Length: 494
Image (spheres, rainbow, N blue to C red):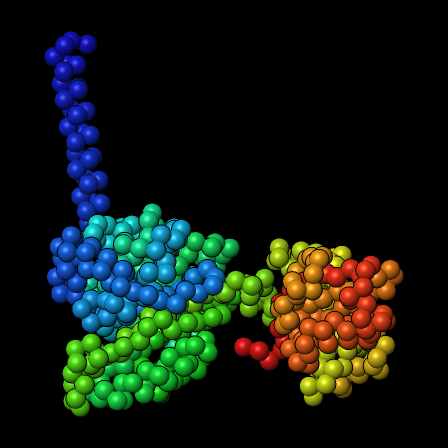
């Protein structure tokens, strides 16, 4: 090949790569969602914005939850109005190792039904670009007709955007999943819950941000009253009551459907504690508290599961075990045979101890358990349920007619831990096993709560009435004392 021809080939290749770069660069630029309210709701100057958020975070002094945070409820007004309230939540997640943040906001500017999920690209703020977790978003899309990408829901919307600079100042190396909710039925909310639950799976590095303001109206006193009622419902984590209360205008949250979804989702994943960190309204912020002045409520809340109360099982696993217990008893009473079961859930297949307790009109009707797991948990529940109904020597066998009026309670046990001092026992939290020689007895944690006994009464009754030992045997040499915790749940609980 001549030098001229070689030079020509090199030039063509260089031009080709330049064109490819330009094309890729232009596509990338098109995938960046530009901010809608920079310069209005918050500063469009990066240094000024950064300093403002730093000041909010430094001034915030929220109550710290004991466990890992799963979700925040944050306001989305202009930073001068609600920024300090929002900072109460964001300060608690400062530098936490979250990798995916789902930001759920309402649609203020575009009316539509269902849920819009932004699928790819990045959102830009004055502090930089935030990449979308495209793989996570894809798990939500094209699964049900109610959840899809409606670009118009994001074109002028501020609810998701206002949260992003706070996230950028609070976390490192994370991606976002922007979600805007339109008008949604309760069924649509539950479908989104299931999609999110499946997408999260066993991950512990996912955070949910609910973007919502509270009362909107012209009455300062009414604002305070309505917000108190709404926050009371939030603290009870009652998603259905919140949904219907929003429909009936008893409660006010412009991001109400996103809040409903987050309450459902949190409980499904075992996060059942909501703490209100801060609450105010625009009338208090501006000092304009006269009647007729436009007033908006702002609150910051955190949802977590405190340490020492971390759920081993989620809502669906609890529900499954209760169904197994009832069906097992019914099958055995009708046929005399044990229910044939197979279970794919890996947690329910673990070998774990458990007790099954039967109550009739709040009275004990049977209680049998296995302290040490010798078979998969779901089979332990099957067998202990049958024994509680038919093998507890204190009671006659439960009849099929009685079973209809029996409530089933399950206690799933943690591994046993031998203790050296009874000072280590926390009443209401710990179950206790006392053993001396071949004699032993056990009380579940809820016994202390139900009886109101002191620690000495608890241990003395355990020795005398369960282990067949002298009442003071727990004080004597040779007595082995073990503690365990129990996750207790029953039929009829939400």
